[in-house]
Image 1 (cartoon, one colour):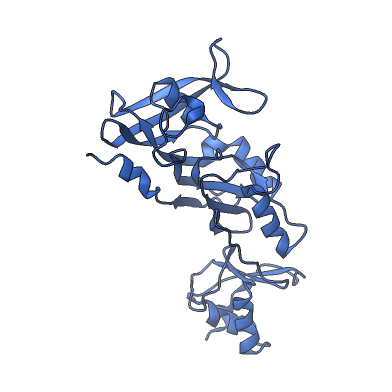
Image 2 (cartoon, rainbow, N blue to C red):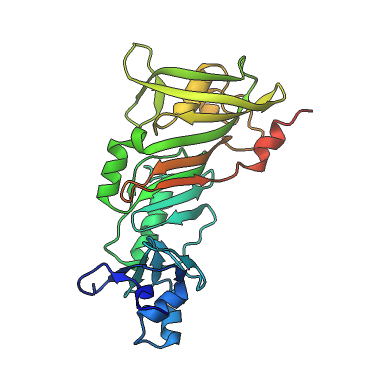
Length: 305
């Protein structure tokens, strides 16, 4: 193996917590580590992988045969490895040094409420990152309502939070939902727009006095049986309840949305799901694309009889 294969150390001195090295030649992860850490036994190098102390481009790597390309950044943590995260209502889809993308089940709060302080996505992720280091933090950039399932984005530092909050519409290229509505929209495609404001409890509602922020929701009917219709919905902001409020205003509330005058709840839940999230990474500038499938009940309930 050539001397350049082990890469170029990006730090002038070995950091007590993390060492980052730039890959110079295409190789595999374990071969790279063996060459880089020649002074350590092979078993100790392998233990770094098994203890989740190795990352590639900010993402924890545990597979010894993971391919490496020139300019990839391999990180070696000299602290305890990143802990596993297991929860029946929340799944980590992707994670790096700055961001965590999760898939939330319906019924789980995004953040704490007056009645529920502990069981929410924010608190669960906060406890998770602090297992690795008590100094670690989690920040929010948007929310999903309790009854909504699907993709959510959290950040690990204030810099990433500020960038996303200030430039959300520029950095987020696709924020797409699927929902089942009562009835059948007159048009198969369209754009809903209205002025929206929020009450003191952050519940969005339509403004009738002509004041508020203008919001847009684009929709397309994927299938319908007359009683229920499956829609794909794209929004222009992360404003809470935007989709639910606009559809209810048009006379097609989300099934199961009693707060917005839905008459039925065929799946025993609010039938809205965040399925696609495409954005530019606020720190690295890389294009990120995440998709999770809709619940099977969405298709079953809209199937033609």
